[in-house]
Length: 306
Image (cartoon, rainbow, N blue to C red; front, side, top):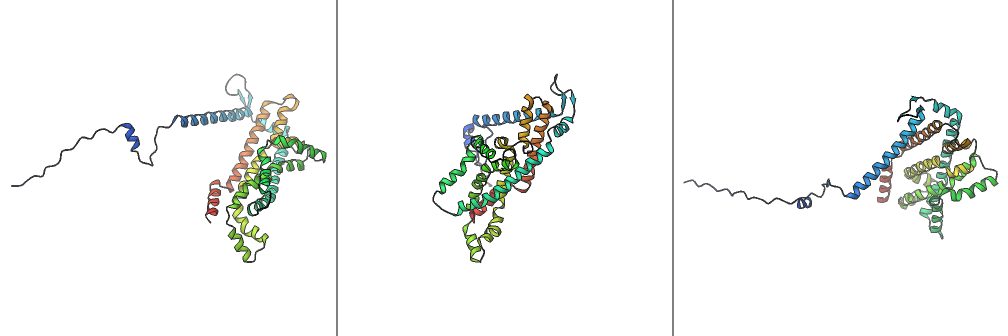
């Protein structure tokens, strides 16, 4: 007689509470429920972005509007405000001065700041911490606090309202900025690379130009980008020593707003503001075309591992 195997009856399992299910979630899973503080942060960021976008859109629309009194949008549209602002305030010359001053400041800051940062990274000397703290002052202090004494010195030497004065005053915060940016970057490079080059007969200049320079290019470009943006947007220092023929774009916008008690048409000022914003975006786009912040961080990590 054949015997049949008995199968065990299924046992009923008790339902798992919701809190227990959350505790049993896999480590890689994310909970869809966010804390109130997270929602508060995201809400604050959204409000900020909405206000920022609203301001930018309002200025752009105002720069194209001829009549705007009765509704949300102008009754008439025209692009003549841009040509009017270009000829009225000589914006071609102003933009040329802005770009020239910015690149001059970047070039001098890199030429002075990179060797100085190398000395701070590789040499120990008495008062090194005090020198580093001294470099922090122009960056931490408001520019107006040391801008007025600088402007007094410039005018005393007859350099006021000249391009030389504009470049010199912008170098005061820019050179320390390059030094403080490049010093940690140089410290990540293994000194044995320099020692090996010197053992092979390379001079100090050859070590710096042929060995260190290729390794420092990402850091130099990153520091140059930050100095470039900072110089183009610098108002206080440039305003104190600039004048006709040496005003940058941001100073020209301020002078247009305050000239003759604000008698200039509002649309002209809006058109200048749009040009200024477009100039900044173009500079950033061109700069980021050659420098990738992600690659910079990866390069620093590789140097640290070496």
